[in-house]
Image 1: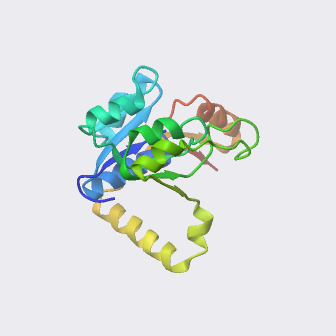
Image 2: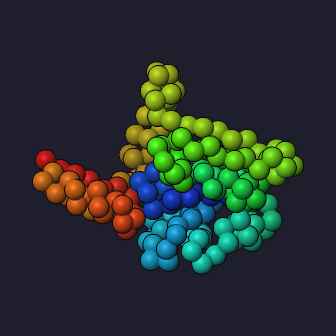
Length: 193
C-alpha cells in the first residue's frame, strides 16, 4: 500500500476493516469502505474512510470505478470471497491485488465452498489473488516482528486506535455472539472477565 493508492475494504465495520482503514490512511492511501447498511456510513467516515459505499443501495464495482476515475482499486481487502470475486475483480485496477483473508460468503463449513475466479477479467487486468492468514505470519519470526513493530509504532503515533463497539461481561458471552451475528458493530466486540 503506497501513497495515493485506492484501497477497497469490504466488511469495513469489522475490527479488521477498521484497522485497514486506519492503515490505509497511515500509508497515505485512499480508503474506500464497503458496508451493507447505510446506518454505518457516518461512523465509517468518522473513523477515516475517504468514501463509503453502501452495497444494499449502490453497485460496488460501479461506485469504485466512479470514485477512482475509472482506475479501480489497487488493493482490495476482502473476508467474504465466495460470491464476491467477480464484483471485486471488476472493481480492481490493472495489476490490482485482492487480498482474501476469510470466507464469510461461503455456505456450509468454513472454506468448503469453492470460490469462482472470473478468468477473463483476471487475465485482462492481470489481477493477483493473495490468500492470507495469521498462522503463516506467526510461523515466520522475522515477518511477525516487522508486523508487530509496525503496529506498535502506529499505536504510539496515534495513527492506529482500537475501536470498541461494545463490551460484554463473560456471563453474557451468548449476548456478545448475538450482537456480532446482528452485524451491528463497528470495531471490536470485547468480552471481559
